[in-house]
Amino acid sequence: MKKILFLLLAISIVSCKKTEKKVEETSKPKVKLHQLVGGTIFVKKLEVFSQDSTYKGQTKEFTDTYYVIEHPKGNLMWDAGLPEQFVMPEPFDEPSGVFRIQRPDSLANQLNSIGFKKDDFKYFAMSHSHFDHTGHANYMKDATWIVQENEYNSVLGDSLKTKNPAVAALKNVKKIKGDYDVFGDGTVVIKYMPGHTVGHQVLYVDLGLEKPILLAGDLYHFKENREHKRVPSFNYDVKQTLESMEKFEAFAKEKNAEVIIQHSPQDFLKLQEILAKNKTSSPKIFEGEFVYVADAASFTDCKTGKIYSITGNEDYILLQKAYLNADHETYEPEWVKVSGELKMGEKMNGGLEEQLVISKFISLDENKKCN
Image (cartoon, rainbow, N blue to C red; front, side, top):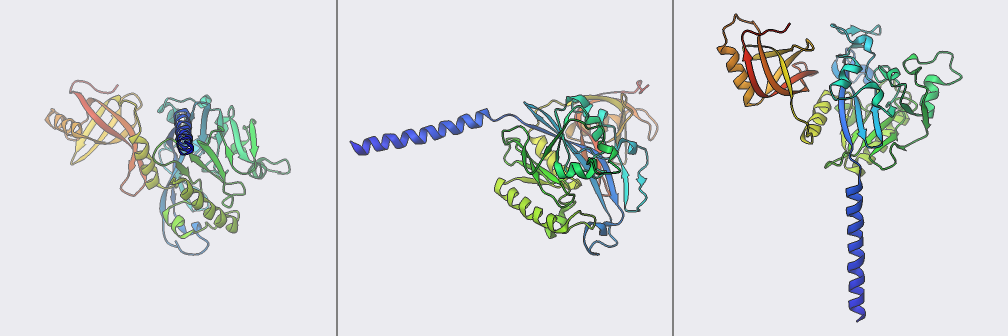
């Protein structure tokens, strides 16, 4: 009899634990992540990204990414790209001779592409306060800025004679010391990883996928820096950086997280693929002028005037054939209607460019042009 009672008790405990786990899983909030390009940075002197001459004579192109996190309790923007003054036709060579920079579009236009406005954000946070992460920060003045107290003091502290104008408009401030669970449910957690700057931080995001996402801020700038634990020459503290790298890797292993190096074009594409696999939105309709010559194609959007390179599925082949069968001069565009979506793809030099991915060819009209 005692054995039977013990067995029933054991079954009851296991059943309760399974029920608790099921309730926990079903009650977990749905979190979404979007990544946007706040600029491109061509590094002309890559040696500044180590403490020695390891990269002397080398160059590399970075992407400058920022992120939008949707949560039932509010939206968070992580990082802010380059200033909008660098939205220009040609890239800008900054005075130090190290960086060539350019931003593709304004914050308002980029947010509009994912259905957001500037005032849709409850929270704003940055990995740190360098110029390529604070670009449109002042537009976030209605959001609560979550920042490490020591990082805040380094840019806006009362004792400073000159304060950082890039964040001067941010008055709703929540100063933190160390790790911070943004929504209180473990889905979006700021992790304190100092060294690159005094209050540098990274972001953990659990989207409910196979692996959570770990955005590395500027703890690493490219793959080799992570592999060899190389510290840029301009970091605030080398010892702290190395300690943060160890702490970061241990946390990534503990959580089985997908690490995303924010300045890496390759990691941008990797995260884009992860997010695309879990995307449920329908393709959009595009109308514009299409040109196809010698296996190269471009599309000019009639509404925005933007020019995109083209990729796509078998319907892309139908679009090519329709263009080649139309009556026109070489290089002359034809008006077409297609469905698809915009995404970032890799350029020939290893950087990123915005592309139109065709999902369906709808029509071609030889008598129609963009106004």
